[in-house]
Image (cartoon, rainbow, N blue to C red; front, side):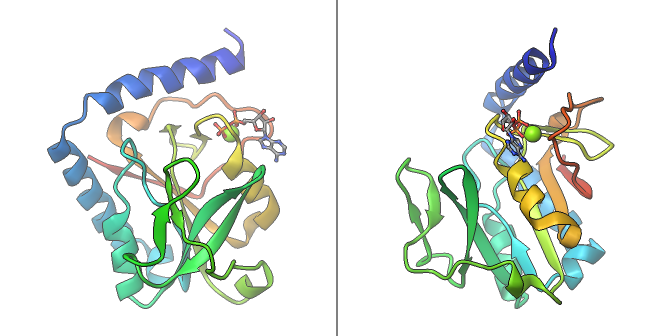
Length: 189
Ligand code: ADP
Ligand code: MG
């Protein structure tokens, strides 16, 4: 199997497991991820969090977003702009997020985009969704390479934490030269 086929097969195998998850499984995993994250030093000291609004097949990030805002951290959420991810600062979960062009929740128009300059001197954590992860902090995404490109553009100044379900932690994620490693992976049940 070539590496692209391996990636495809892993995405497919994971999708089947995600579909089998109950609402209770999902809620437990989301709570565990928040607990583990809350004990993580990089999270505790983060001034700004680049997070994401979870889709139904991803760990629910709502409690994480709420906790970050309550802890006084700046919170930024991504929107796809062409081939790239742009992050916008939100301050209110009810008002600042709405379904975008593809029905996916994203920051509403009018919010301020977080610039690279603004990050200097700040401790920054990026929460990263993924289809699969491994113990070397390699990550498989949905196949569009958005996070690989984003990490390329921000370099090592940010601390990247992948979050996922236990079955998403696999022996070895197929890795190509452009695939960027994370700094940590947090797994819920
Ligand atoms: P994912 O990371 O979402 O699982 P892949 O790693 O398979 O997706 O990458 C999907 C596509 O994105 C590939 O065709 C790859 O060439 C492209 N890509 C990834 N990173 C970059 C980059 N830094 N510059 C240009 N293209 C990239
Ligand atoms: Mg990749």
